[in-house]
Image 1 (cartoon, rainbow, N blue to C red):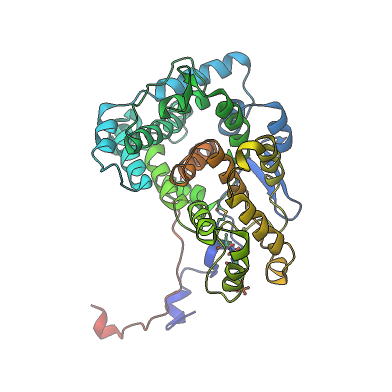
Image 2: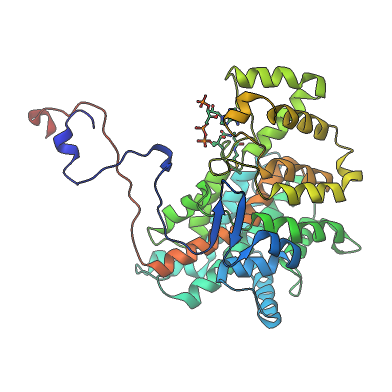
Length: 401
Ligand code: ACO
């Protein structure tokens, strides 16, 4: 266990589990994933069922509050989300203070922080010095709706500022997806573009939660200190942005652009097999079979094939996939394309650039992040504080003081 085992066993059993391959950190009844079978369930429903029968708002409600909404509950949820999309001036000021060519995520993080700066729950949590949200489910439920809405607004303001577009305020009666598109300026005849809206109502269902992903765990790590949901989400977004997590999509797509044509794929594969680089968009900690979301995404790509096929990089992606499905390097390690990779082609076909795609992916995951934050507020306080195994040399007693 290191230089001075006697010091290290004082606290009893200690397990070194780098990357938490074998360690569960929460009990949860939100999402079940069977990575061997390729199956996902939110609450009591398979995503197959939800994808075919529901829209994003209904599924977000299911994930966050544990039940599909009645029509009146859906309307209340919709209006609360739209209300939460009212952008405070300080949020607009913070984001628009960035140069237009700044990276997207630092702008989003700054915008969320500005939201936290004026949110009543943040004030109550951090200034009144008590466990404001713990077990306080009425406030918890209102806060997670505000947080989801805040992220949509921050992304839209960021998007508009970067492109020099006018930011359009949300419609108080609009759906969450429609309002996100409206605020970003993806409109036709003054309303959210119906083709994109219809697509996201289904696509985002697939991403609404994915149990203990790195970013959700980051949200919960922060939540274990009893901090507020917007601040917890900031932690989650920081982690989602990383190249081995959501940020992989951007890198995968840039990799396709560098490869350029099908003829160049083999040299990329050779570099990957020689371990000179990783193939971004491939591999998954949980799935050892095809990601169950992929079939729906491919279905949606087929529906939009006239648009998607215009992108020559899709052929590059298919060629990489063909090789990955046959080459023993990939098959022996169960390395398959992850769902976000192909989802990226839908987004680009609909007019979104890769920097904002990761942000949209984060947005569609936020119902899950907030559901887990909510669950942690029901379970009671347990500060997350992992142990370490010290590998240095313990100084002799005289040098300790
Ligand atoms: N390209 C090439 N080789 C890979 C890849 C990859 N994308 N992923 C894993 N491997 C290899 C590793 O080199 C290792 O090989 P070895 O046994 O010879 O040492 C083996 O497969 C196992 O790899 P691990 O890193 O131990 O697998 P782990 O389950 O920890 O990693 C991860 C999962 C981080 C997603 C990994 O597959 C990866 O880095 N993928 C690329 C980044 C990516 O696409 N991330 C997005 C994941 S989905 C999401 O978060 C949105």
